[in-house]
Length: 201
Image (cartoon, rainbow, N blue to C red):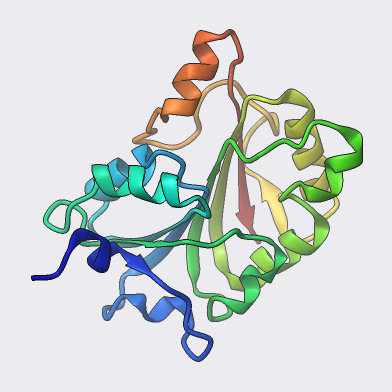
């Protein structure tokens, strides 16, 4: 009998793009940093017409995600244990991803650590390669300085455009928003999320 872990968690295969994790032609979405698994377990249930891959490096967080997933309710979800950076372009076929969700990435607040932030020009170059035209990127962070950093990186990239009247807004910007444990905890401490929504031109 196949275990839930065997069903959901996949290892990388250098000879196979991750698009092949599903044997159908549904649109593929990815979540970078699945945390405790609230989004990757809830959002795909409302969108069974799409497939989703969640990335998380921490084994503890993978286990937390698995606690919220089961094959019956989440047949369209897979997890990959991997830290994502600009090398994401090597994982997928070009122009094959329909959307990206990135919620509360590590802000690396100290200036000397800014080079470790996920949002860099090279990372956006890679996203531009794997995203379909009109694909959306939804981002949330409670760290205002990082939000401004992200907006600056996108504003200097010709392949993306903000879909919001203001690049940063306090209200969530997509239907079926899932409040993660981290968002709830940060709100409780007085840190409100900043939402950004970009589209691949």
